[in-house]
Image (cartoon, rainbow, N blue to C red; front, side, top):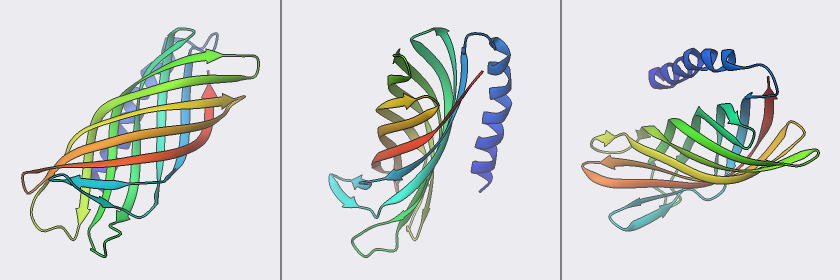
Length: 181
C-alpha cells in the first residue's frame, strides 16, 4: 500500500510543472483510464500460467512539443488476479513509466500509438519465497473521439520469484477521458 501511495504522490508532484509549460493550443493533456485485463498470464521457466480476468486504473500526463508527438509519464495499477490452475497465488502491480504518444488528428477524432517504459512494483500473495520488482513496458494503439479514449494495450511486467525470472503479460482494453489544457 505504501508503494501505491508513493507512486501517486510522485506522479502528482512531477505533474504540476508539466502543466506550467503551456496552456495554449492544447499542448498539455492528462488522461484518466480504466481497463479490462483480458488475457493475463505469468511465465516462469518457460511455463505459462493463465490468470483470471482483472481490471486496471491509469493516469497519464503528456506535453506536446510538436502537434503530432506527446511525451510524458504515467502511473497504473493492475489489480490482483489469481491463477486459473487452482493455486492461491495472486499478483498485483503498480507501474510508473515514461511514455511516447505519436498522434494523427482528424476533424473530431485522433488515432495514436503509445509506448511506455518504466518500473513495475509487484505485490504477490501466497507465494513462498522472495519477490523482486523489475522493468515494465507497454505498446498499444488507441482512438480519441472528442475527449473520450478507447485503447488496446499489451504490457509486460518483469520481475523475479526466488531468483527465477518472471513475466506477467496482459492485454487490456482501456477506456477513459482526456483533459486538455
